[in-house]
Image 1 (cartoon, one colour):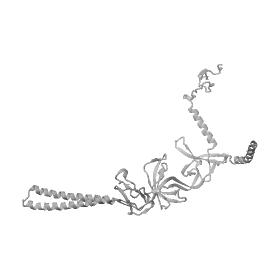
Image 2 (cartoon, rainbow, N blue to C red; image 1 turned 90 degrees about the horizontal axis):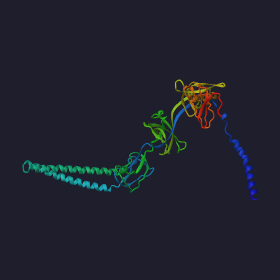
Image 3 (cartoon, one colour; image 1 turned 90 degrees about the vertical axis):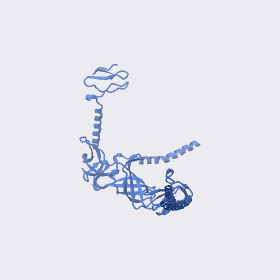
Image 4 (cartoon, rainbow, N blue to C red; image 1 turned 180 degrees about the vertical axis):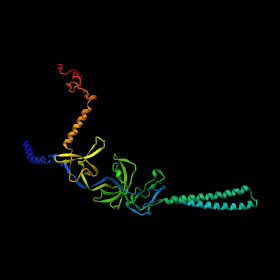
Length: 427
């Protein structure tokens, strides 16, 4: 019973699937190659050539904010995405230890000042006494030295106070320009090191001016010679559908570099009128117009062939101009081209017909020339064929030796022997 059910299911499946398989077979037939166009009309059109590349958008000014002195974060009023004006507070460090040092330094200055007053008073008195010859020369010079040392001590204390005030000033970090906070990896109460310490200090914030954005692109070395500063660029942003903005080339690196196995040059492009939807890190597609020709004679790229001139050795470009049932090979001068068409500056006129494929006669001539070249390379000195090495068990060699009237036949085991022409082979 199960056997009959299985056969019934297979029969129904075959009856249902066979017509559909036949329909799919009919629709999936390969396209006939003869249906492809083999000729094209020479026409006038506009040709625009542009260099295309991709790059990453980033801010023109981005700063990693790090403290100049060691300390602990006491205030951090900003967070991710906050817009900060120039001079606004970014963060402050705990300065209690420095304030204590400052008070101690101020007391040291007061002490040095009192000592200087006392030394000056003693020196003035010694001047009078030495003039009346009531004290010795040695005592007079000692009082003068003491006055100079007291003055020096006061100056040192004042310099120490100035250094402390500078360190206190560095505990308060303000925005150097109008900016937006990009990152904030540190929290309040966390200890940080100064920029003069290990690993250039601790990064507290990353800020950037998002009103001025740039694109860092890598342009192939073959195209970079067409670029120049202040050249306009068309920009599209992948993340923002339909957004098109303008930019201009700001700088082209003088040194080539290899990126993704492609040798090229770094190009910096400045965006104009930055849209607020554009964010750092987005991918931008750029198109740099480098050449255009309006209302010029043009043909498809497939119609232009290149071959080295046998006389001059210089590559020349030509087309096959259709003449009735035949063709005419014509050298042309090519201008700029895009991905589909090439400008013809000399050699063709609008309305003529060119071939998109090499004529069969040309193909046959090239094949014949290639065969003759291979045969020439296979001959030895004097035009004689190079002796062929026959494999073991091979038959009689077909190559005749010039001027001897003999042919070569192989010995058993693959070696050959020479016999007079017309003699019978050894059995």
